[in-house]
Image (cartoon, rainbow, N blue to C red; front, side, top):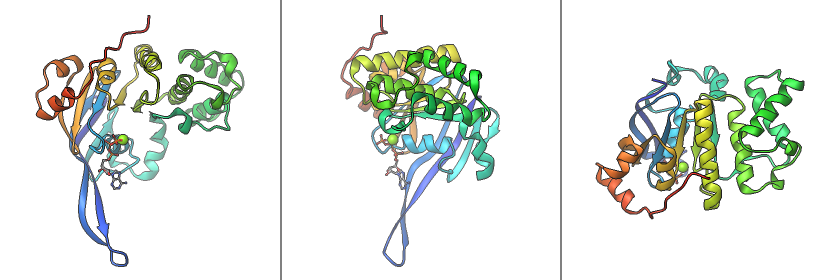
Length: 267
Ligand SMILES: Nc1ncnc2c1ncn2[C@@H]1O[C@H](COP(=O)(O)OP(=O)(O)OP(=O)(O)O)[C@@H](O)[C@H]1O
Ligand SMILES: [Mg+2]
């Protein structure tokens, strides 16, 4: 299995008091998650705000060390590695965030942004080879290479998200975690970006965890969907099957709140 989580837990101690801090309680942000994801799979992760989606992602990437349980990626147990052993593996994980404007450096051109990202994997990249890689990345995400010297503010929201996607692809990651990547975009732009991600998955065999509160978006992009509630996965299943046959009461409740919007592939 490409990515495997075994009984993963992240508990945050909650303390109070000014001088003498007392541990009052723990927040069980992730509380015993078992999950397997195949290479080339898009797993949708849904659940209400605060259920632990981002904490789960961060603990997979080892940005937060887990309180318990194991994380395996590509046959290696990440949760057993020391901080210094993890550092060089950071490039294996790339994130795409909700707000590309906040996540891109406003003072860096596309060229600099992508150069920096490529060099996290290939520190010596330069010259023609580097230029070629950057051009390929731009074409892959539907940006014209002639924009290479432009800054983020010179682009629309959808184009900025394309830059952020190119930056995520640049280090050739093993896993991409997209945390609400289309939530800040207009509906028409949303479907363009979703279709782009689908195409990229097909062409590059990307493995992705796609987090969204928008269930119609998650259904459209995901192979399987995992439903998270209070730190636990309460249900996981093939996307259409889960929508048509929700088993857990919490899943039913989530689905009942979905407005019926149909996303169509861009023509
Ligand atoms: N560093 C931290 N210290 C203490 N508590 C935390 C920390 N990070 C997250 N939490 C708590 O863990 C729980 C899960 O938070 P998390 O951000 O993972 O939720 P989420 O599902 O991503 O929510 P959202 O949909 O709003 O992004 C929340 O109760 C949150 O307050
Ligand atoms: Mg979150």
